[in-house]
Length: 350
Image (cartoon, rainbow, N blue to C red):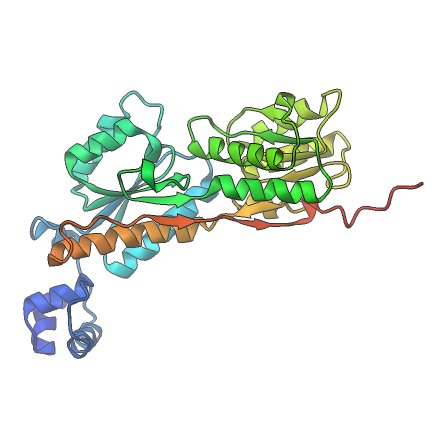
């Protein structure tokens, strides 16, 4: 027969509630008691039943992850980061993909929350940037953490993991300028993602700091897709005075731009530099490999889940019934690779 929580309590010589606090990682158990309970769990090979925990009372041990993102690499990294934390803390994860443009998006998410009896939600862009969705969640009194692009805490009332996209984008442009580029183009991602605006603003800020006039012809609007990179590069290369460098809003776009440049016989980086953003596998599967901004998606997701779970544990223990989940910040870092380095290019003949 499978061991029960009562078997663990009896073997460890503690109360049922003490075992429950250890299983729920509430942090209010003395170290010696914690060891006795964990030893008993190991000896009996006891496996907590999350579904049973949820049914036993009003406390839920399940989180939801809501997303709308066409980038499979981003979604997988995000899911894995949340899953790692959930497994470590004894929570289940319900994954809910949806479409931010759906007319029924609010009803879909609120119905999912009610049906699944979630303890909390982790929401990624662009859903996390939709005020109408957040207002509906507030009315449900569901705890949630948002992952968003930006850095200004004063504008956000709810717990956020901020990604400093603007600063990271500016660092990429600074690097391109250091390589001698003045004609730098920008291929944008989806307009309903705040990251597109943040990365564009970082691009504009860096140009302005160096006294480089922005050329509207060097701006191409698109989506976070390989096809946007292909079409954007074709357009930019067809200009009377094409740019010497392209900054793409993510690595998938940059890979498409690199593909288009190669088709037209453009040498990268000697004739044109191309940079992306995120450090997804796209940036490492091209030749040359892409300069990018390394964004630790897995770590970001895990930190979001950790902050939410610690808050829920505090609520159950009565320690922080009024405390808010703290904001967290991540700064993607410049990762220079061959696609923007001119040092490998031959010296021009005199």
